[in-house]
Image (tube, rainbow, N blue to C red; front, side, top):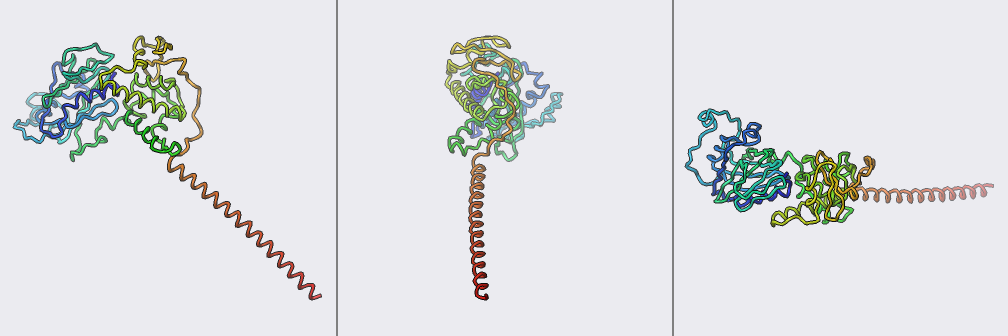
Length: 402
């Protein structure tokens, strides 16, 4: 299954088609046979919808990614087209079909979101990415190509042999301003794992350790009842983009068992660090066309697989395959052990400005108490002195009267 690094490489394949000037028009092609099962489930646009997009004259102006989802941003071209636009209702009647798509081809901005499922990928005549689940293909477009993007003399195709992926089209804001929060397929998932981990590490290095605000990513990972791998695989829980092999790689390097619950702060910090390290290095390797580092678990986890199987890692340590988070997971039992824990009753200390404010408040309170104590002592001493003076004077008056 394509994970964040592979999906980022798919985004890069689509980037050469981008035309920010909107002078080039996109053509979408659907090679037969159409994926009728996906169309019927609403996970792929019908031919009528694709025709409306082509006649609507759109241009690819950007390609975004969040987690494992790629969003192709389409805008109306600036060049007036002579094509006769057929309205949705008329087109449907002419074809005798029933198309319930809400896309008319008149929208100013459209979001075309690609999810790659188990075996989906983007390819171009110059680059055909390999997937562990697929045999090597040399011919372009590859088998099971369902959608071809063509613009400005460049081309890229979406293929999906097992048809677990999807191509969804949504209307963008009428203002034409692109906002990632307005993309439905982005709003439905958590923060991007690469961006979130990078943001956390930058924030941590920019301030002293005692002032770092760990109230987001680290806090979401630590002290949770759910096993850490299940937490990482849940695209809506903490981050998006981490799949089976990436999660195993992160936990392997962190020396944490996938079923481990109630992580400490140090363990959560370590996972965030390894998350960024694995993802950034994997993205760079795919970008340069290099293999992942030879010491990575990635190269050894595919050899057997299945619960109860064994293999050896780069260092000769035994790899076991167990079920965790609903997936087959590769672990090193000698390094990754489940530690018996329960939820920590102590809440994490507040950091940053809140902690500083609390310390300042305590300090001021202490000073006030000390000053008040001194005032009370002074007042008491003054009263005692005054009482003694009064007693002496009274005694002197009595002596004179006698």
